[in-house]
Length: 401
Figure 1 (cartoon, rainbow, N blue to C red):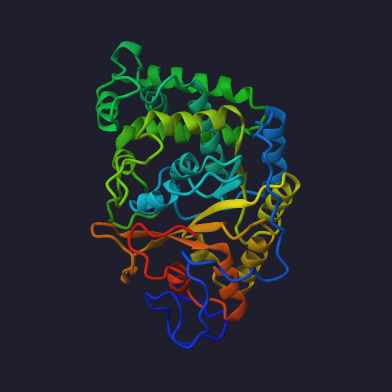
Figure 2: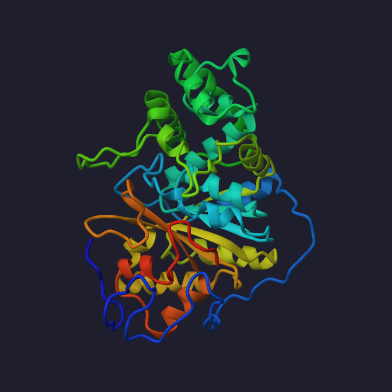
């Protein structure tokens, strides 16, 4: 993809995290410089315990925050980012802080949510199908009695409690069990009928097109099972990781930190789903409504952003008008010195400084304040600069903001 030069720039960013001829700013792991004005005020700390949302609040937020559906060149039913746990060790060490999580895309969000335990989460994607998939996941989390049943329902397999390896089972045993489950069209129909019944309790109005998308997405998981892969609409000859491979990834420290890797991680996300605290939103990162409205909602609830998983979406909003809108939307989100981005970089011929061996992607953390400082003093001219800025001398696991 072309790099669109938005601002006057000198030499490209080095591993140190700043341009040679640019004023030095705060690295992601350092104390950041003050945020530029105007910015959304950071909410005040509160000891008020989190309270779940009602079904009507969930459906109202989904409806009021969302923008019209937009096309994208891939369906993104699952992630293709094998490095998504690259930041997990650092995230796992963070003290629990009150706030909200924002993300994009499918299942990888659940791992970051499990690590952060936010009061609210908004998963914002330009594709309405992603919101439909998130509603499918919500139904499955609520229906499942275990991690094994969760995967069985997702893939339309015939679940039998007596064959469940149990709460303490390692993920590879669960995956093996699910692969061995019998499945036919009737099993998928039974699982999908249960999903539709559950969805009706959400109060979310689905169109006929939405219902067809829901069925198509669920059938794709039935057809692929736990070995379903990310696919582009126009094939490029690449082989992407399977869902099972993604779920089985380890952190740089060798820890299993995915949302299905442990009973506690799964139950934490399940609880948030049952409390209606994970909200899908249809929205463009450079749009005029969704992120602005989320910012207003968070400010009303006195919730700062804990983390915003943006994947590599910024790569697609580098043209000046879109970039200006994206920066405006970031400024509309309540944040503080602890707020950080989680970014994914896809190696398309140029390796990221923190790219780990065996991975085609790199996942990095950068503070909101560093992004705002850089935007104020110089700006960004390419996604490479965005993805490598503020990383300092951090190793693969990276220090947290």
